[in-house]
Amino acid sequence: MADITRGVRSFTLGTAISRITGLFREIIFAYLYGASTSTDAFQASFRLLDLLRDLFAETTLSSAIIPVLTEEKSKGKVNQNLLASNIFNLLFFAVGIITILFIILAPYLVRVIAFGFGSIPGKYELTLQLARIILPFLLFVAFAAWSMSYLNTENRFFVPAVAPAWFNIFSIIVPLILYKHLTNRGIDPIFGMAYGVLVGGLVQFASQIPALIKNGFHYYLYLNLKDPPLRGIIFLFIPVVVGLASSRINVMVDTFMVSFLEEKSMTWLHYAFRIMHLPMGLFGIAVGAVALPSLSKLVVEKRIDELRSTLINSLHLVFLLTIFSSVLIIFFSHPITRIIYERGKFTAYDTSATASALIFYIIGVPFASGLRNVASAFYALKDSRTPMYVSLGMIAINVCLNYFLMKLMSFRGIALATSISAFLNFAILFNLLQKRVGNLWLKELTQFIFLTLIGATVSSLAGIMSFNYLLQIWKPVLLVQIFILFLSFGFVLILFYFFCKILNIKEALKILKQLFRR
Image: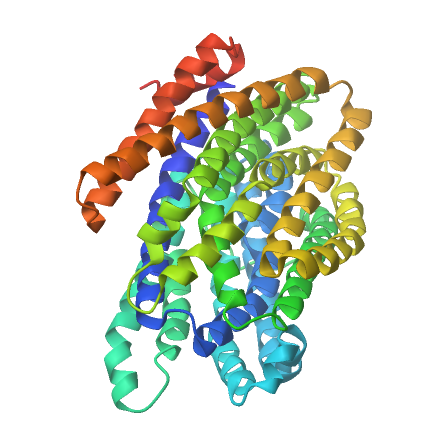
């Protein structure tokens, strides 16, 4: 547990830096472009990239690479580096070809993913142009994911976690530099964001190269598709891709349905989704990423009892962090959205719409985060098919939820459907894992979740009341609002700690002490 907590600290610190720079990126985006036809076009083109990016990004590749690379590492550094080089060379050719094909097929893909845009003059054409610019970013993402997998196998989590910060920084710099230049030439300045994405992706990969060398990576000009370890990775990778493809199909369905809703709906959901990914990235992804190498090592050493205890400890950790942060964001959804986005062309009405979507997105974060940890246990056991089958089964459920909830709640229904699907996916996969490895103490875990929820709710309620009170006393300028917000967050955290003591949540107290231990 202590090793995972230390790894989570490193991963969370790096991810926090990345998320903060990501928020600055969104702030600049909202300031420069607001919510408009151009931003809808950019978000749709980026959704097309996301469909492909997630297939070759950190979660997918690491789920297949780390279990096999951990086994090769136990045989010696040469074996580890040969396999890593083999993977890199395969990615170069495979992802390169896929990127070229999708650039060629972009007109048809854009028409499918944003079908409703065709009724608005120029919107489909703009989406297509943006998509063709940013699609080569896919190759850099695959290389960055490969780097992260290697470094995580070496128990190095900070550098790959902070690498996306470089992407965000250059996604800020490039649009700022190009905005006036493009505007003066009569070109939509949204193209600056597309070029920023491309440059940022290259730097994200390049920033990890020094750490790779420092941790003993040596490149070999070696490509062998018949290599048994590589085949093992492909065997794991294909079901992961299929399972992930189902979630991306859900995203495509969301995008398709949202394109028929009121103008700006897609942009509001995007901004809400970005905030929702703060606790998801800081804690949910962190625990899953750190736990996977440990679980893989335990499987190689055939210590299944320790695997069960490690998994349940990681679930306690992820639920503690994500329930607390999610409840906090629910209570502070409006001030958080206002402080981050409301300036320039982003209006108070946009803030209210985004905040309402955020609430329905955020309630699913604990279960989506827990799902990553349970899936990591399957991947460590070299079983990627079970998560795939469950994900495929969730497509129909998500489509039905989208259809009915969208009619009742407009764009907010899309966010709620995502959260409900995350809960169902986690519940099913957790039950299947128990049948595979034995008792995972569901009763104790449920009690832990319930007590954590009570503590987080009472603490956050007191926090938002204090925030509103202080806001009435002090001048509501931006810097003062930010100061009061963080002051309130600190107050909520202190209250939460004391509620954990009052409720005698021993696991929570133990985790909090380990997280803040020097």
